[in-house]
Image 1 (cartoon, rainbow, N blue to C red):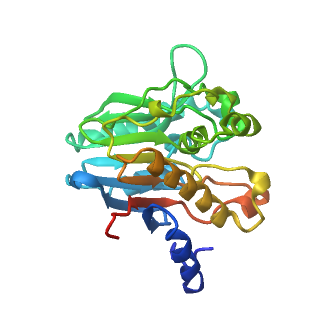
Image 2 (cartoon, rainbow, N blue to C red):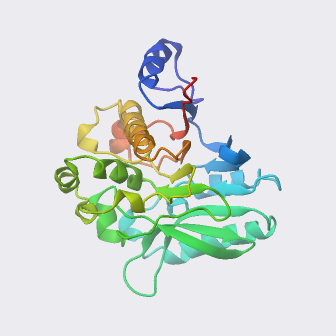
Length: 297
């Protein structure tokens, strides 16, 4: 388990290093909430804002500058502190929060804001989406394909046939949380069995090639709680280790399947949880940058 500063204790670092040598990537960890800046391929900078509450997120937004050209939030940032079954009842609050980011974006007209938020089609259930906001306007949107829980499937419209997305004017592909693990599962010969067991039956038969844009050199993952998992598999008090494995494994699989992907950046947050859930809850967000190892390294 990491300490309150998000640092790995010395006694665990040797084991961590041994494990990471088996993967295709090198890992940079920022396991705290706050403003984190990463340099991707082609010198593309990403400003990741990891926050546990909406008020924290707005506070961190005050730290951005005109140099921050791509600002990214975790999944469902406008819906913090709410159970999924209340998404429709809090629609006005969500829309007000989207407008709040829109107004902020007017101060930085050259900056693209990627905001994890529920969106509301004219008909049907809301979608778990990422809104692309620039200069006060929503200029695009990506939608989540697969749910991380039964509650998510019940309360959201998951867009199974969502086309591969490229962040405008970049070489960055985009996935939302559990879609990363779904993509890695689809590469398994036991994909149908696994997807049925974890309740993602809408993903059976999906084409992995449709998840990542062919022009993408980097992959951005918008997350909450890493990229999800199964609570029954977590030993109480061991959630950090469990969720980190759940993130590293799919990242490694994606790099093996998509050799053009040079790096994966996961932008994360921890939801507020009830006392009874704390033994199964990570102690920190998994803001992690995975850069493909070179042949020389």
